[in-house]
Amino acid sequence: MAAAASSTLQQGSNFTNAHRVPRTSSQQRIPSGLVRRSAPSSLCFRAGSERTAAVVRAAAAAAAGDGGAPAVSLPAALLFDCDGVLVDTEKDGHRISFNEAFAERELGVSWDVELYGELLEIGGGKERMTAYFNKTGWPAKAPKTDEERKEFIASLHKRKTELFMALIEKKLLPLRPGVQRLTDEALGKEVKVAVGSTSNEKAVSAIVSCLLGLDRAEKITIFAGDVVPRKKPNPAIYVLAATTLGIDRSSCVVVEDSTIGLAAAKAAGMKCIVTKSGYTAQEDFATADAVFDCIGDPPEARFDLDFCAGLLQKQYKLAIPQVFCHHLVQLQITGRPQTICWLMHTRFQLRKANTSECFLCE
Image 1 (tube, rainbow, N blue to C red):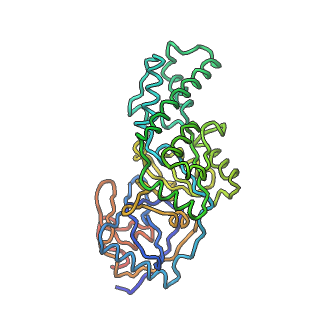
Image 2 (spheres, helix red, strand yellow):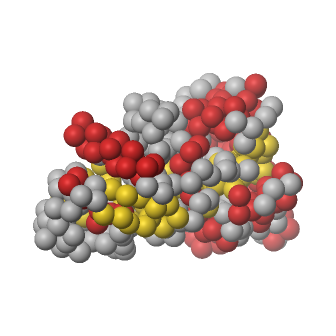
Image 3 (cartoon, rainbow, N blue to C red):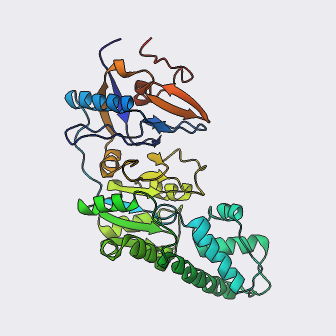
């Protein structure tokens, strides 16, 4: 085998990653999530063994000594979606609250888990109810004119929000893993933190205040609900956030969980990391800059603020010893585990993906 091989990693494509490899402060960071998704296959990168971790650390050291990744600036802002990102609220939070509001008004309507998943393709609770009733027929107790129906929907949504806030205040829905850690890391390094959501502003504020705490909430700016006329996938919410915070959109990193949120972030010209939620796990995130199952807490942290900063950098140059090619990474391709070479990942090639041989090692 040759002693080393160089490869160029283009950041800004779609990756998936399941474990962040530990490193010491003296080591050069290798960007997490070196696997590129190629539709329709779903790729999940795992670095689960001590041997793999040692290899990654050795590769990082090699990169540091041979034109490794340059120092990068931190994002100007970290922008979180709310539902599905901060808290997995949809199935057991918003859906339940909608149904309770429907029951109180005796509308004869109930949204089951599957139906609500389909309705989530529509951004905004008022818009969701309006679209549903327009398609299935308005309840007998609903008014007949468009203007009265608009007021009816607003009133119904207000009650739904009150019911949802009661759930949050009781802390029946916990923060997703890693949210508090990444928020603290950003605030501690003076990176602006904001939430951009299609949900009602009061509901979002309740989540931030009750679950992240008042001290953090005072430092977090919230953009939600009807603050913009058009909701996700329209980019208006994220454009407003950047404008209000006085920062360049290209210096923002968004954390989303859905394709409509991803579309909004990318249309705003921002980098976007997807953390899949219960309803969105099977959606196609081919345009995301990175895809994870969650943000995660140690020892299962998926990414950190340095990783977010790395997404803003166009490319890294890595020098990885070729001796480390074999049997390092378990790659899940349409449900079938395969062993694939690290160098093949960094070159974004899946040549001979069904074998354990690296095309560079032949």
